[in-house]
Amino acid sequence: CDDEDVERCRQLVLKQLAQLRETPLSPARLHAAQKQLVGQILIAGDNFESYALALGKTFAHTGKHRDVAEIINQVHSVTSEDILLAAQDIFAEEKLTTLIYK
Image (cartoon, rainbow, N blue to C red; front, side, top):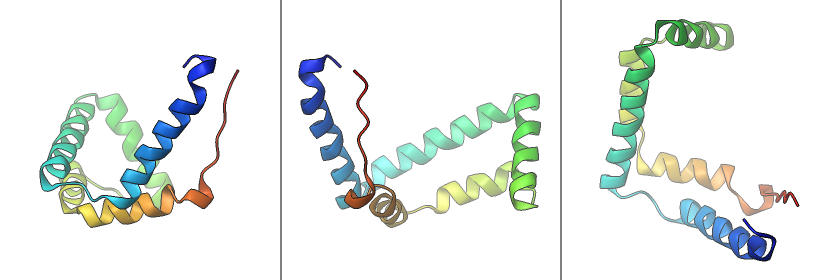
């Protein structure tokens, strides 16, 4: 953003982060997000090189192989409460910092 809009933009971002911490997703928004993520997972699976790399990374980090169906089931099992709790942890005010490039 322009220099004169930095503080306004910062406040807008903080407002959105507060909303994520305080307001659970509606069932419709949760479903839309899950549908989009599942679609992206399925599209990514069409690229065999990318899929093999993702499998290798997962195995290297966890020592386990997760197939696409398992991942999709996990995506569908996420609740609005799960997201709210994660947002409260990740976006807790005491953890936030601001970096402004000029």
